[in-house]
Image (cartoon, rainbow, N blue to C red):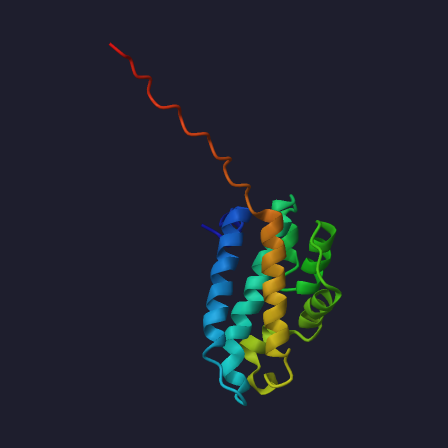
Length: 164
């Protein structure tokens, strides 16, 4: 089987599956945040990578939920700025500071720096800013893609009793 015949990983994933994966990366990021040590920027790298990846997955889930073509989304690669622009067009409403931060993550190539550039770790986004961005994106995407819960059905009437 050639590479062209294989499906791209995630190509067939539903918006809900990507949303659930984003949730798991957000939870992992929060656990990894506790492992970081003040004054040691490299100890924050696992948190950064998980947080940035979770953000990317949330935005992707939203775009898929709104009918965007998976191939077009994939062409954005890890460009959070492009994903953010598309997500804003799909109804996502972010604080100006958060939208600006998402664009700066792309401009500063933080996804790549976090993965491969330990010498560049110190000037990356402030941890509290990245945490706030992650939490805002998670909350607002959740509000837009959450499947409505099944309406509660009324309790069935009790069985009829017959008096004899």
